Figure 1 (cartoon, rainbow, N blue to C red):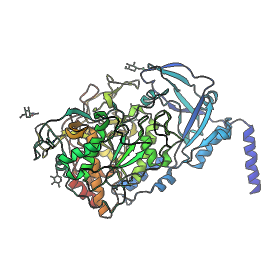
Figure 2: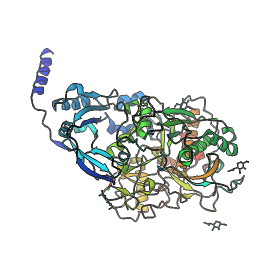
Figure 3: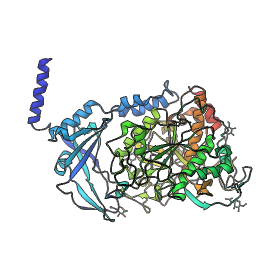
Figure 4: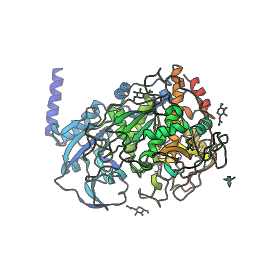
Length: 638
Ligand SMILES: *[C@@H]1O[C@H](CO)[C@@H](O)[C@H](O)[C@H]1NC(C)=O
Ligand SMILES: *[C@@H]1O[C@H](CO)[C@@H](O)[C@H](O)[C@H]1NC(C)=O
Ligand SMILES: *[C@@H]1O[C@H](CO)[C@@H](O)[C@H](O)[C@H]1NC(C)=O
Ligand SMILES: *[C@@H]1O[C@H](CO)[C@@H](O)[C@H](O)[C@H]1NC(C)=O
Ligand SMILES: *[C@@H]1O[C@H](CO)[C@@H](O)[C@H](O)[C@H]1NC(C)=O
Ligand SMILES: CC(=O)N[C@H]1CO[C@H](CO)[C@@H](O)[C@@H]1O
C-alpha cells in the first residue's frame, strides 16, 4: 500500500515537471459557414479573457436509446417501468474519470488548479483563459466577426482536442457555435428567444364574424371543441384526477412574453365550455415567467390563448392543467432554460447553458428577473406540449444532440413530450430554406427541417384540416389553409429503429421525386412528424374577440389533451403513464389506430413538398388519433 502510494505521488511530481502527455490533436467541431450578415473583422484582442466551458460527456449516454426502448417498447418486459429522477441522475452524470481526465489535461497545460471549476452537477468544467491559453488548448484562432448592425461576436472556425480528451468532452464554448440566435445576442441586447413576437407562432386571419351551427355542419369552416371531439372520437370524462397527485392534465409550456388572458379563457368558456369559466391553469413560474398583461395583441396572446383554451377545454374542467411559464420579459428563454428547471443535472453555471444561445439568470440586462436560474426546481408533468420550434440548422449538432438526450431522460421518467412540427411545410420557420453553404434564406432551395421535431425522442405533431365542403365524418387532408404541415428528414439525427419499417415503406413505395441535394434522401435519417391533428380554422378568443387560428400550434396541445386522457384511463386502472409513445404507436399492434391521412402535401422551398400517402408520410405522420381505439389498445398493455 505504502509503496504504491509513494509511487503515485512520485509520478505526479514528475508529471508536473515534465512536458504534458503528448497526444495527437484532432478536429472536434467545425463550422460550415459564417451566418448571413456576419463578416470576419479581425483577430481577437490578445488581452481578452475567454470563459471556456467544457461540456463533459455523460456516462452511459450511448445506451440511452436502449434504456428508453426498454421502458417504452410495448413488447418489452419492462414496459411502463419508468425511472425516478434519481435513477436518471445516477446513470448519466459524467464519471470521475472524465472529470479527472479533463482537469489533469488543463493542469498539465499550465492552468492553475484554482482557475478550474467543476459545476455542482459535474456536467461542466469552466476555465477563465487568456486568449493565448485558449488558442493553445484548442489549437485554434479566435476572430471577431461583425454584423451589419455593428454588433460583434467572438468565434473560431474549428477547434481541436487531444485524442485522450476527445471522448470526455461533448463540446467547448465559446467556439464555433455561431448561429442565428447568437446574431441576435451580442453587445447589450438580450437574446431574441422563442415566444417573442415575430418568431413563428400560429397564424390568424383575424376577427371572425361567421355563425357556428349548433350541429357539426360548420366544422369545415370553424373548428370548435365539439368538432375535435367528434373527429378524434374523444368522448371521455377523466376519473383519476385526484387519484394521481401529479402530472396528468399538465399539458402546456409558454415562453414569456407570450401569455394567456383569463378574460379570453372566460369568453371562450361562455360559448364553448361552460365549466371552464373562471378556471385558471396552475402556473409554474420558471426564470421569472409570469402571465404578463402589459402587452396584448395576437402576437402576445394568440399562442397561449389557443393552447390553453383547447388544451383545458378538451381535458375538461375536471382536470387541472399546469402551465409552465418560462422566462422574464427582458430575455425570454430557450428550451434549455425549461429543461434546466426540470432537470438539475442539465444546468450549467450561474447562468444559461450556452451563454451564446440560452437566456441567463439572474438577468444581466437589467429590469428583468433577478432571482437565480431555475435548476431542478420544477417537476415534469406527464404530458408536455410545446408549440414553438427552431430550425435544426439554427443550432449545432452537438447542441441539438445534448438537448435531445434530455427529452430521452424525460421519456425514461414516463413523460410524453410533444412538439409542433412547424408551419412552413418542408421549409423552416419564416419560410427559410437552406443553401449549400449552410445559410438560410427564403430563396434557398434545400428543405429545412425543424428542431426538436427531428429529435428521435420526442413526438412531432403535424397539421391536418377538414377538406373544403367536407364533414367531420370524412377523412381529413393535410393542412393547406394559411399554413402547411412541417415535415421531412433530419440532417442531424439518424433514423430510430421504431420508425424504420414505416419510413422505409414510404420511401420505397412513394419515392419523392427530388434531387438528392435538396433533401436528406439517404433513407437513414430521422423522419418527422410522427402524428398529426387538425390545425386550421380554430375559433379562439384573443383579446376579447373570436379569431380564426391556424398552425401545428393547434395540433400539439390537442394531441396532448388526448394523451392526457389516455394517461387518466391507465392511471385509473393502476397502470403506468404512456411515457415516450413513439415505439408504441409505430408498432404493429397499433397499426390502424390513427386515422390515416392520404391527401394533401406540404409545399415549401419552391416545391410542392412531400405528399400525404397511405401509411406513414412526412406530412401527417401516422395520421390523426382515434381516442376510442387508442385508449383500448393502451389499456390492453401492462
Ligand atoms: C358566442 O356567444 C354569443 C352569445 O350567445 C353569440 O352572439 C356569438 O355569436 C357566439 N360566438 C361564437 C364565435 O360562437
Ligand atoms: C451562401 O449561398 C447563398 C446562395 O447561393 C448566397 O446568396 C450567399 O451569399 C452565400 N453566403 C455566404 C456567407 O457564403
Ligand atoms: C364548396 O362549396 C361551395 C358552395 O357550394 C363551392 O362554391 C365551392 O367550389 C366548393 N369547394 C370545393 C373545393 O369543392
Ligand atoms: C443526412 O442524414 C444523415 C443522418 O441523420 C446525416 O448523417 C447526413 O449528414 C445527412 N446528410 C446531409 C447532406 O445533411
Ligand atoms: C374511431 O374508433 C371507433 C371505435 O372503433 C369507431 O367507431 C370510429 O368510427 C372511429 N372514428 C374514425 C374517425 O374512424
Ligand atoms: C392535476 C395535476 O396533476 N396537477 C399537477 C400538475 O403538475 C404540478 C407540478 O408541476 C402539480 O403540483 C399539480 O398537482
